[in-house]
Amino acid sequence: MKQHGVFICIEGLDASGKTTQSKLLVKKLRKRGFNAVYTTEPSRGQVGRLIRKHVLYGKNRSSAVLEALLFAADRIDHIEREVKPLLNKGKIVVSDRYLYSSLAYQGAAGLNLKWIEEINKWAKKPDLAIYIDIPPKIALQRLKRKKSVMENLKNQQKVREIYLNLAKTGVLRVVDGNKPKRAVAKQVLSIVTGFLSAQGT
Image 1 (tube, rainbow, N blue to C red):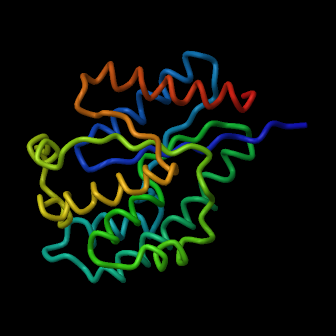
Image 2 (cartoon, rainbow, N blue to C red; image 1 turned 45 degrees about the vertical axis):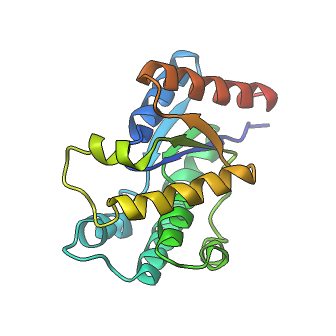
Image 3 (cartoon, rainbow, N blue to C red; image 1 turned 120 degrees about the vertical axis):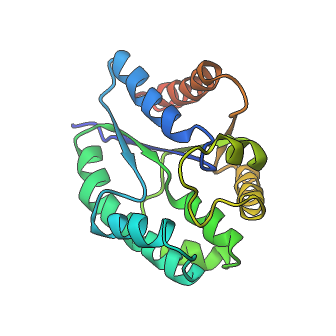
């Protein structure tokens, strides 16, 4: 019987190191003999490209409802087009952002979290979700590229609060992103390999 894959997502504020850590995790898992693949949201699909061009880096922020619906649509496309086929081949899929980003960012914009969960109810639940935590001030200081419409201190503080509340429920494992990159990578790898071992993977 073919073994089913494992779906892992890495969450965090922008500049928290989540992209770096997601790619490092894939690299380290491959070195250990696992068939790991990196992916990201917004996805590389049509809806994801639209979000990057017109939502994240538009002149003004879109309606939070529109954002949430677009991210949910992109998520379903991402899952059906990319994630599920990889999981069905037994691969470990590491997604740089996923459902919890919608809860945190659109929740911070004032939307009801239950409603966000409802419009994402067809999205596959990840097997493991990790949140890399850093203070919003540090995140904004790290950003050297053009900031998105969501990257301001007040908004990032609200986003972090929601992430930490989600972590309290047990859906997210928290990693201290203030530590050196290697230390963060070591902790992320430890959480993931511990999970995989417990699953018999």
